[in-house]
Length: 318
View 1 (cartoon, rainbow, N blue to C red):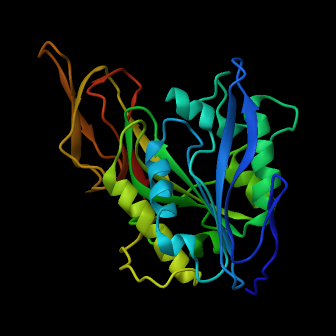
View 2 (view 1 turned 120 degrees about the vertical axis):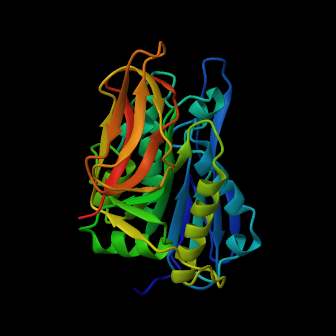
């Protein structure tokens, strides 16, 4: 695909080929009149090439993605790509990050506010700025996420398998697991796709807790992808990748104490005992039996569980 050295302009600031800049996507005022800015880092080569977005912190407690982007933008080879441009936003949801929460102060999920409105809610305004200032200028993007509270996601990449560009980029990222994940309404990934922009979603670890396996896999995947795009010269070995067509949750049929000897990312076989729920008084225990062959792509770290709680997310090959 031919690329031109097009101009990049964010919030009224031009960044020419060969230049780097740190600018603000926009600013928002809190009730205390404190001004909150969303920093954006741009690294440009003089040579034509793709523009790649690395974005994290869609939810304020998803710190693994934030750490991945932070580590990447400290690297000299990222600051000086061989071709093309890198746009990095380490924390898009600054306000939720400050409070260590998943959602915005009004309870909204930023990743359900897209495409946003200029005069809408706070989340809608952030989404609007991202969709209008950043997304039109990129070719590809990686949106870094983390499992929810108590849910630890094994490092994985999510994309739409029917989108050939999406799937090819995912394979070049080369994670251990790639999950076929249909679009969800009002998300960045779906709205960017409407504009012809391929966004990959990386999931890894648990909210509010560093997971260094996920951090390292996220960094290495980005480096592999940028090597494929000729933006970097470094070579990293690829993972043997498994394609997962769908996923399903194993839920608790009873309440009690959840035990498992299985590790995140492990392969399981249909009919295998993969865990147990015991009541705290020693009167009852129930075996958890795998209903499918597959891989554990997410696991609940909470020992005390209630009936209906999600315990394990199983990725299934077909």
